[in-house]
Length: 205
Image (cartoon, rainbow, N blue to C red; front, side, top):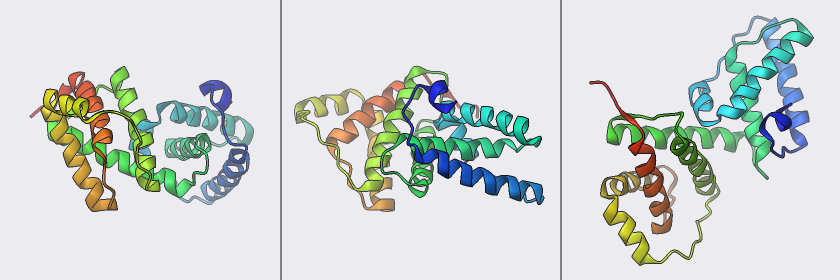
């Protein structure tokens, strides 16, 4: 159902990991153990397609087992799907990735005093870029590009405020994970920030 709904390739290991997870979840639910997910808010916003599949999965569970799991469980299922979309990824890395994306988007929101337009294509592309960026950060990989310094300088000059925000993200990542963001990476982050901010709304004061 997930493969058809999202038209993506998913690791076959999802069948095992999700079956194991659901078995334990159903057992705990029947024992009256509360099911909560501290990252549910982030998951709904960063992995919208996967979360929608998670909600459909709750319908399937209810039909098969005659019990309705809480919506936070849809977020857990979504994370299993996200993990199955990535080669050589672990659930721990996927959760760390989600937390870090949340930290970065929070920096952008606070820096500009805005709320994102989550229906915007720019927002979707911003989150997609952050997914790849954060994965590189967590794995200690650097972005390799042939972009010349002149173009990078032009982008930084044209979008100075967005560049300042990218620098703040760079400082945060360096302090939290001892990872140095290259100028090329900052350039792309700057562009995405500029685009997503241009479609955002100012926060009420």
